[in-house]
Image (cartoon, rainbow, N blue to C red; front, top):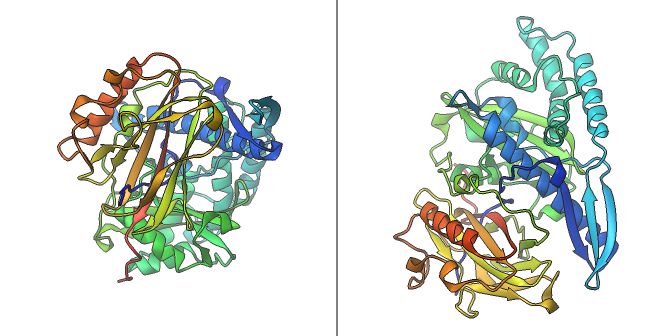
Length: 457
């Protein structure tokens, strides 16, 4: 039985180019299918830019690593796309759609409108004023702050400067809200506080992330399960009309958890936050530094060659359970050679080159007949170790030079490479990848895996 454990959401590759490359491309048998693929690709492109800006500038101040409420909540928002232009063409018998953000003024107008609404509602809030009054007002406007930041991240990527900020920042607002809340005596109560008044139907609870890391820890997986019992939840994301997204970070002796209930593309219905004492959490909460830091030093070459990866399963493809079967699929818009590296993000995580039983057993060849089609890489079943795992794909248009495919020390190994640290394998694989000739591209996918539901304690 093959074994592969995976983790959530796209791992974000850093690019040093901004709005000039802010477009998405999609293919489909119909124009609508191609359009949806292009919009998804555009959304992912924005997230890449946001992550790059966040990592390179926001968290570092005079060589110090800093994090405040505003900075880490930005990465948890949706990516709203305001009327992007869609251009269609035909390519190899398929519809091709290109989605482009070419109306930046719409973001300035949207941000100005939201900032004015926030200021109108919070005009009576004073930092040294009545705390109970401040709490009631700021609590009522919290969802507007989330909406503001979701548009702000796109505006920042587009290089837009001419938009106003609310009189009271989202970070200051959140701090005042938390100061007025009672400390929850248990994780159960914390989950109830976060989901209070969230009575909507068909809520999909997204995996709970450590802010800015896009990793799900043992605590994150456990708390997702707990939140799911507090709302009218659905297991599969596509079945949810609303999505509950939560991130957390550590501040002194507390864990700060912030949640947003989102509907549609980016509309924030409700927001909440809670301060959880660390002593209530007996499981691992902070993900280790992973191989993404190595990728942050690599600027992918500009190319129209693209590959996509996805999981097919009967359940929620973003959150896989123990023994759950699934199929791994890949798609490319050009013929080429693709090989894969899997990295487990646990503290004692290991890495592996994915075996594919083709040629040298490491490479999947996409021929002309399978361009823009989902091709199966095999069927797998979720097994321990659980947590987060990332699958990286390396695509080459030219047949690869054998000595530059994977490091020699991996060729005689079977299963996870127990004597090789994931960071070392990624660094060596990336070095060889850069030496390959011809057009090349990279992609990745991350998923959460977890054991079967734990009993609440």
